[in-house]
Image (cartoon, rainbow, N blue to C red; front, side, top):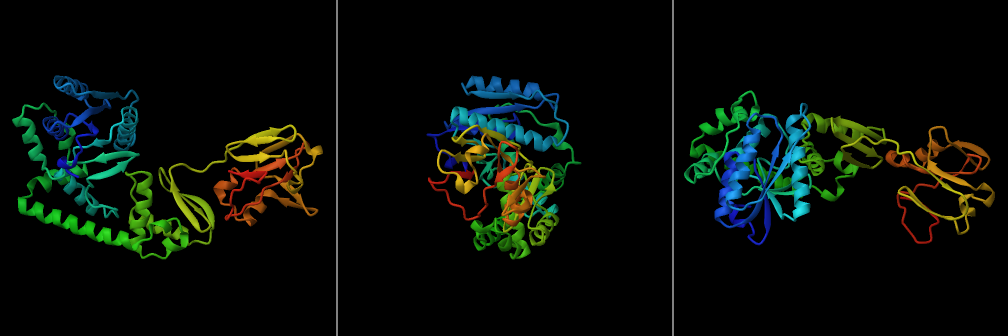
Length: 403
């Protein structure tokens, strides 16, 4: 996706930092008569951040270009890069919904692409794409990078030759940061032949990944046995594919992948496992998936004073009809329907059975156990627990089902 591929009938949102890259893109969009607005975030992390916002607003006003400004009030002290990324993409998403922007344009360029690739190699990452893709989704935002064919020096030259204002971020010169170190010690020293060689290397690597992708059955990536039996390279790709669909900034190292495969192959059928901060693995018998939040019990309790209907976020119940198959008699009212507790018991065929044990025997996935309902009579005794079936199918005739 290049600048010429953009659709002039669409309205775009330009992610702008007032640096030379995004301001060069501003200029190119303007002179080519694209329909766009700008978005800038002031994190208040640098002294010049206020003047950068004012500079963009003033310049955009000359050409009647709208500028959306997000002024971040809270102080960002931990996980600064990740937190800022999350803040700005949520901002872009909200703007895209509110103003119907087709996509968000980001001014990453060829130098960024090469730097990212070299960082991936340095860190021994297992990406699903080497370098930077020209079009992707980040936090639900459609992101297009139309300048990947441009060198950084070319973008700065565009600004200088056309009197486009910009500001240089001083932190870009801090070579204690890996990206800056690679930029100043490697990328900026490359001659044209070196660039062509590494760009071809990136293309070859991505062709290999594309071939690998075709060999993997994406529809089976939640299947414990299928993923466990892939070769390690395919496992690395498949698992990174899954986590990046949750959050584009997530990345699994080979150590992470090994840890996950060990969990999938373990005899423990059910559980949740912290892979690293913000990423959990949920294993539920033959199924697994990733999530960003720990599964916690969600307590609920509803009362049905007499035969009637309850439609809740957790279950549906219609006890206006015959309830003998649910072991509910009129004398049991008022009923309480709540999630099963640790010490709940139920009498089955004259024997006292622990409710949690039934859920285990029925192979109820552990996250469903946290919200699985039980019916209690007016005396507080559990009289019915709906049976779990992994092949359950909804029908209109059902008097009680778990959502």
